[in-house]
Image (tube, rainbow, N blue to C red; front, side, top):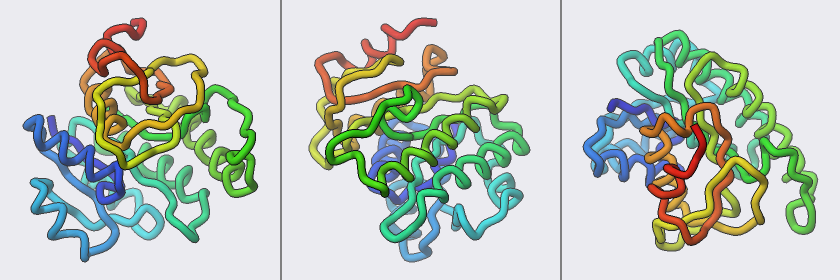
Length: 218
C-alpha cells in the first residue's frame, strides 16, 4: 500500500511512518520544515515539502496521485490557531478526491464526534476552540465521499506502546494512550474495512489492537 502521511514529522506522525515502513508499505511523508527532510528519508519515507497553510490544494493533489490512502496526522502547533486543523483537513479531503484516493484516516481527539462536554483541565478557552475545529474537521470528513475513519485518542503520552487498548464508537472514559499505540491503531484501521465510516474512541486498555478492531461491527 502506498500511503501519504500528512504531518509526518509530528510526534505521532513519525511513529505512523515508522510502523508503515516496518510493515512493508510505501510511505510519502509530507513535512513543512526542510530541516526535517534528512530525518524522514533516513526512516525510509519518500519525503515532500507541503505546508497545510501555505501550500495549495492542487499542490497536495499532485503529491497524492498514485497513493492508495491518506493519513492526516497533522495538528496546530504552539502559537498557531486551531483553525489550521479544520482548514487542513478540508484542503486534504479535496486533494484526495481530486487525486482519486478513496481511503482517508484522520487523527482527532477523544469525544470530538460524540458531543463530549469538556470539564476540569479540559475546559479552557484554548481547548474549547481546539475541539470546535476538530468537530468541524470531523463533519467535513464524514460528509466527504471517501472511505473515512477518524481515530479519536485520549490524552497522548510518549510512553512505550502496550499493544492493548480500549476502542469503540461509543463514549468512553477519558484516559491516556501512548502515541505508539495510537500509531498502531491508525495503521491497523487503515487496512481494515471494519473501520470505514467510523469515528473510533481510543484509550489505553486490556484488549489487543487486532481483537479490538475485529470486535467492531460491520
